[in-house]
Image (cartoon, rainbow, N blue to C red):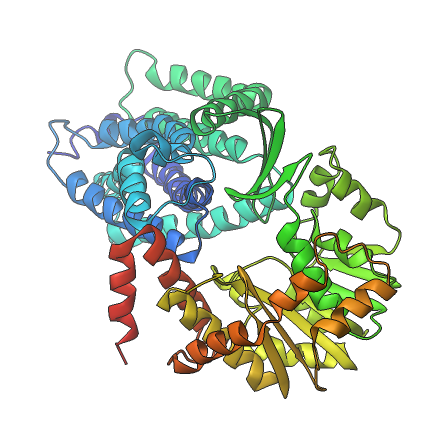
Length: 553
């Protein structure tokens, strides 16, 4: 019965077949591009990592499967062309709405505030609810496309649908990469996908619908109108969509700037006279008066541990206090490595004295590269390599805390050079998950260097070198005084407290009792322990699951 009207369709069978193939390809391209864009938005919503990506993608695939099942249900239409057209149109409408709601989703559903950590359960439920309409509709397009090909008397319709959609998926990945490289705004990409599906629906209607009432001609004219709309109004509509999404997400304060880069999202929020810079949803700096206490503590201790540092390498997380503290010492050069070239430019306009001092210092040289890649390719050597304020909470950042990375830094250090890094600690007693994290990183460091030490505090400082470090209160205080480094609150009494032997012994005893393993590139235990610690603070249920996983061989 479904093939009765095919003879009345607008085009010949061959042309009808040629018309449907690119439409199915557009659906495949739109699916992969929508997935990536929505994953990025949910990462912004809760400062997520690769686990966030897995949860969002799992929800998407589950909902697509539900959509494919529902798409197999019988239709009252004599052909499936009207259903396929309606699905394409529905996707073109639902995708922009989903993109607007994805970032503010956890706040709208669960009241999560700006910069607040989102536990895994909240993130999973938010992504499930918000992506359900668009992903179910997208899943339903596959069986609908198969039915359309069957009505065109094409053998192996399911196989051809897979082929066309897969080719479109590959093309979508390439197009999205090019769009990010060309700095196209994400909402512009969303609108391009939506209008592409709308155009595809009209192409299907014009090519495969029966000839009556001039419908094909009207559809073609509407298609031309959509192309013109795409050319002239997308940037303005995309800006409005971004503004609506930001207003829903950032309820306290005014968004001064929100910029997507190939590496993440940078948002500047102003509230009560202060500006806060968020990178991928995580607060990184507050202006005009950033809190530099921990940065100065870490930088001055690391710098004074070396007898005469001349060239220093700072890897990520260093602008806004740490670089200024390093430059307070009489060094020749500070090389700062950060992968995102847009971040320093945005920070330079923050009207912050600390940042102005750092960026105006001629000794500061900024390299925009991946930190791990820079260390492996750079041929110059340094007196000090400092890993900035960053924790192994993602696979990307965990690469700077593995035994292999620590070993690679040896060739970039002078013979008396020092590697310095810091990990979350606690002034009194640490949670077992935090003990395991510190123990894993400390053991990885000891595997790469013959001499290492750990200094307890709110952030534990780890130092390592190929020669004995020999740190004591008198030595560090004397070096800070000789260099006229203006350490501020870091007087002799404070340094004595930081280097207190009893506190150090208690910390070392706790770490030695841990069974945590070495953190390796292919066995990222540092990420696991960081997630377990995060789960203990924000999601006890997730923490218990991770504890069970650890017992699996």
